[in-house]
Length: 295
Image 1 (cartoon, helix red, strand yellow):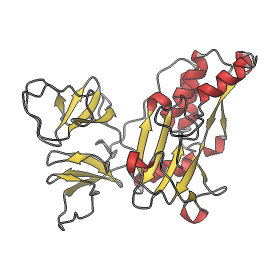
Image 2 (image 1 turned 60 degrees about the vertical axis):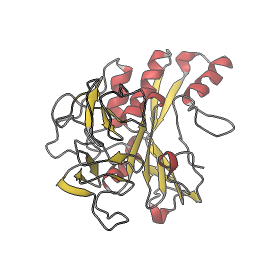
Image 3 (image 1 turned 120 degrees about the vertical axis):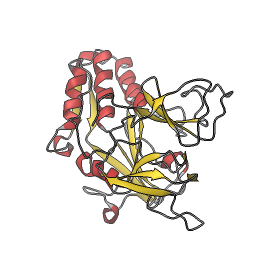
């Protein structure tokens, strides 16, 4: 079954009989008498993968699979294992990136190939190092450095920032970055929708769900129009989205900002439906925090 390899906290939806996490491991050591000042939190610079994922529910997470990813399907050092610097570019190759920043986890899922990779992205690494500092531990370590991005050392930089008590490093501006949310197979989109997928940005042509940009739907139509090529992972930007206001009508796919995050309407919302973004994901589909500066 697919799962996280290094969740910071126990994930409530985890069906495993024994939920493992960094927090639980640290508690086990301290309960056994280990001094906090002798404990380090480990951050994996690699990921673990499954192939033959049987369902696309929950974006491939907690689903049965046929086994570990084979070397023919992308494993590197051993079946089911690859390093961060190799996994990160998969976001430009048909994989969808999913994150749970609160629990310090991220994963990649390709619903067509039915391949799932769990890995630590920069924010996951930051959250773990931040946890180590908050708990008064000796610090954080990684295994191993060659798995980091060679040109940016982005995982190492995020760990260092957290241990120093600084905010996560701000990526440098990219003129060709994807600035729209990544397309999701379980989200509803409409004519106002703009998404990032497979290294391109796309605009919706009509109501659609489950049809990937660049593909045709069941009726033979193309619900997405290509806008431009871009680089993933997406660097979210409002792209003209206006702040949500109570009492306004919103068309399916309309994007709004609210409390620093982006949301899109899952259906035509009437003015009398006072549903605040962030309170009902079936009305306002969340896309996460956006960058306040242009990219």
